[in-house]
Image 1 (tube, helix red, strand yellow):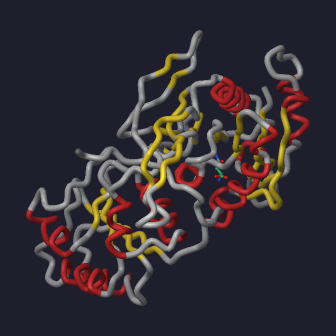
Image 2: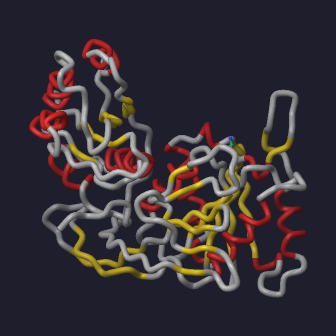
Length: 357
Ligand code: ASN
């Protein structure tokens, strides 16, 4: 068994500086030491790419997502499983983003990081690293889920290929699907939750694995991630139509509106729904998510969300905010527009959404 590790930055490899934590720990040396006593995985079975520059994940962009994808693809044939070391702040955005782009990868990719740097005596770095390695070695992640009919890249040409849902995130004794997870705590060792689907596995002797079968359609030959102008807007009590309009001027390429509950907005606020209808009228997709971590967006369930549904807004179903945002950037990077964009937001590329039959 060979493992390739892509080290992107994050607290796990940080050290104290005059201005707070910054990358700077000896990751290669620490890993060698961590594995030196193991009879399952020796240091020479592990390769490491240290991305340059190492970043705090708060600085991650879609270009960084693509750099990770490029490194994984470059090492695809060198290893049986992969670990991505990443900062926790945007790890769930990156793991969702990579899940869409790697449905053809066919090997496990496990994200992890830590709340404390590896040099701290109370650090969760070793537990998370060994947990991610154990998940990678388990043989239970990244297996073929189903052969699919793919109409993603060319509407008329229907072809079959195999789709895999292979990107996971290990943190605080739990393994999650990479596109179902959200950072829930800035300090707890159990820092992540998967509010709609729960965990894939929990550590122990032995690990407890949960049944999980979210069908996915996959995406063949994805174009690289590029940056796109997506406005993420939170609705709040008392917010006026003028404020919403100002936030949408100039018009972005897409809007991700964080509404209330099942996708409700202040419909009595004069002009509020009109701003959204006008935005849609300009051909800008408006995707409506919920401020609830555990949500199933159903536009039109209430009168307060009905105007959004009638205007053609797209609900996120049970996707996390991170999965929805990364999916919007993915679809824009693929050049998907109009009705196809709305259609794909509701379909499962990599198991990120529960498709209602
Ligand atoms: N700011 C850090 C990061 O996301 C937080 C962490 O890794 N715990 O890179």
